[in-house]
Image (cartoon, rainbow over all chains, first blue to last red; front, top):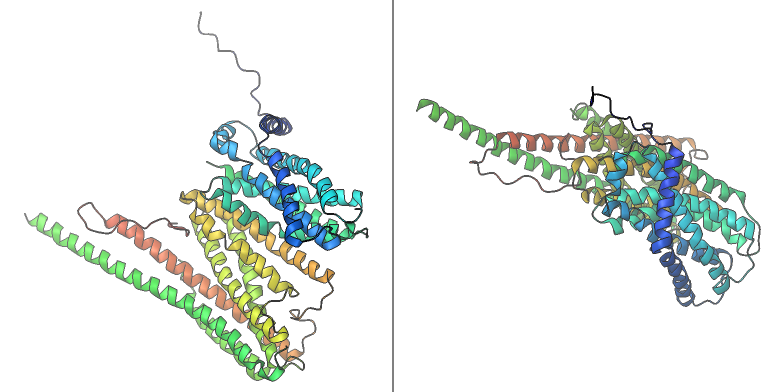
Length: 236
Length: 61
Length: 245
């Protein structure tokens, strides 16, 4: 009889594949950033201002080795904190969390996507900051390939820990304060390894692999922990 | 200016005093909590007794 | 529930601490170069080791909480971290005293234990404020557990990184924490001090767990007995500690 046929079954009943979800989330965030430019320009400007500050604060025209590495990494870290603060704000304010939780996707996808976005932001900022540093403050010719390797490994660590801290902080009341208070100590091992590793590179010297190993270890350990633990932050 | 080896005794004592002080402060805080628990248990006991009396009175009426 | 075995532990602590102190002052020989100053070592290093284990234990209880959702684990995690933080303050203070006796300054960047503890303190000092800033109790416990796990895993990494950083500067370590090159009497004293500190810490931990649990049960009892006509003060305000099991 009419009206007793079963309603048409929607075709895509299977949960979306992990990779597809991650890619979609990344695309969304990158599109928003390209359109509104809320994070990256501010972070990049911040690094240049900080370099100027350091010039006056240290009263130096040129930095090499340890001092150069220190200034570079501290500046990058503080710029990262700016980005970390804003990472989940859109989800929080516009109900993105609830929407995401309703979808039949693996929650870890949100972590991977956000960490990738933060990584992209950091790379974008460094494309501005590192040459600026080279021009404004660096007094030596850096070993570029090794320096880029250190930057890459450190950025990965910052992205992982930063995303985790951001998710933790976004639901608390003192969000902007909690992020630096948690992220900075957590990243001290990373800064130690990155700074010590880049110091000789910014002095025309050699490279110690052990710092790269420590950075890799940091990335691995915190990456695994973040993957294991992130779900629990999203429960309702 | 390194403290001479034999006069370091005061500093050693200071270190142990720090340890002792931390433990004793902990004990003191626990003691305050215990006192508060005792007081509140007393209040609740009193409350239960008052209620017993009230229920008895109501039952008699 | 938490108080079982507390009596035995307290007695054991008293005995062990007395033993450790006696050994430190009457049995262990004075160090050839450092003299009596070296005795600080028997308090500073055990406190450091026990505190570090406490932070890691906090992380382990965090894992247990997330897996079982048994709030007793959350309470254990909270108290472990809280206690280790206090021990951490002790480590910093006794370490500063040591630095003063050895080098005349109240701080030493060369001493990896001291520097690591400063950073550890900076991180874990945020634990209670973080908890306090989350009002919903279930979310508070959950987020605190995540923090304790991340921070607990970070503690050894931090230690290793700081240690490597110091070695790279090739400064000699002032405090010989390893038992490797200690003469027999000193090693025994050190081990006894370590065990004493560990047992004392567990005793204080259980002590606080029992006390908090008693307060919780008291609050629950109060809620059951209170009716509108009764004149009792309102419920407890927001807190960083778990409020009920």
